[in-house]
Amino acid sequence: MSSILDRLYDSHAGGSLLERVVTDVLLDAGFSRVQRHLSGNPGGFELVAMRFVRKGRPEVWKIECRDPSIPLEPSDIMMHFAWDQPRASFDRLVLVSLVEADDALTDALNTHPLGMPITVWDGACIEQLVGRSARARRTLELPAGDPGLETPSVPAGPTFPPYLPVSMDVFPFRPNPRAFDYLEADGIPIRAFVDQEFMVQLTIDNQSPATLQLRSLVAVTVRALRVEGRVVRLSRAGRMSTESPNFTAAPRWEPGAGASLLEGQVWPIQARHAELVTMQLAEGLTPGLYDVFFRATGRLGHQNVTLESARFWVHVAAPGLSILPLWSHGSFPDDAAVRLLGLEAIRWDALLKERLEGGLCFIGPTEYELLNGIVDQDWKVRRAAPRGACTPHSDLDAPGTVLVELGGMGGGEAQSLEAIGRAVAGPEAIDVFAMQLARRRRREEPEPTGSSRSLLPLLSTPA
Image (cartoon, rainbow, N blue to C red):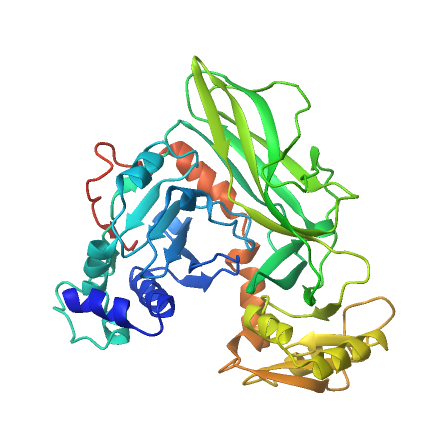
């Protein structure tokens, strides 16, 4: 089996090969959706995977990977960023590193403040996973394994359950956000929430027999960066939410600073009860790119409690910033948006001019191409005449004019009318969290107890 790790260590592709192998393992384990997450995570990558377990209930895993030569650190526990598609929490966070976890990381994992179990896949576990994955073995150009061992299951590595019987979940309030900003920070492409679109739902679930006295709820700034380069703003048609938030969050510019939301009040969470609130970004923030998360502290009986959320990128645009606003149908084409950030200056300026002179600009097809069954093989930026005033809908009788060809699509499935319909009516349109919370509270899939270093039983693919 050592040839597996040798190939991952020696590959010039580095973390990209590990990403392909992990994706293969997840697909063979029954995850129907595995997608890369543009989070701006240095030294690695993030994947989000979804599958449907007992009686069609959804299960979401977040996989945080490091390049083969980079060990995991205790700070990596809080490096993961929130999923920005369906209204969903993570059922499991998986940390992947070919380097074995040291005692400092193990100590941090034993008392982690997150509300989901954390599993560690080290080199030895990756070997087991690849041995059971036909796809991964083909990717590594290894001989076929024993068919009797190539079962669609995931041997879980050391797993660390939540330290407390209370949890906090924070995720986008809208199942399908209407807009994202794409930009670069420290040379890394990032997909960030647009400030006026940023509304999150916060749920605190107290499964203990005592009341949780929540004394502090703060939005903590990990870092804030000035944005001076290009920004691609991708939008989709949709209705504005009429929901009134319970709180407004005003993150501070200074790293490590926290903005209080409770204003000195105590928020009691009754025993075996969950509370849900919505939060929106305050107006008048200093322009820039914010990396923020939410932290709640309080008392549960005689014990101090600290709960922390995943992190969010939020962009507050400065006046005069070079923003290219575009529309898209279906899912957000991350790769195409990142390619636009790297356009030659003359082509970027031409797109800005086209947009300013009126009309609509799309990444991918306009409604004319969709309705007439025209499927692209590569990503294109098109201009189209609007249908009516102040509308994102384009002319149905005239094809869009191609302004830029970006390449890289391959097959065009995500640009077909049928695929877009499936996406809108599929998992992204489901309130996944409601089912996740119900499953949690019914304890249908209890986490195993005992030593955190022991291997869990195989997680078999649901029937």
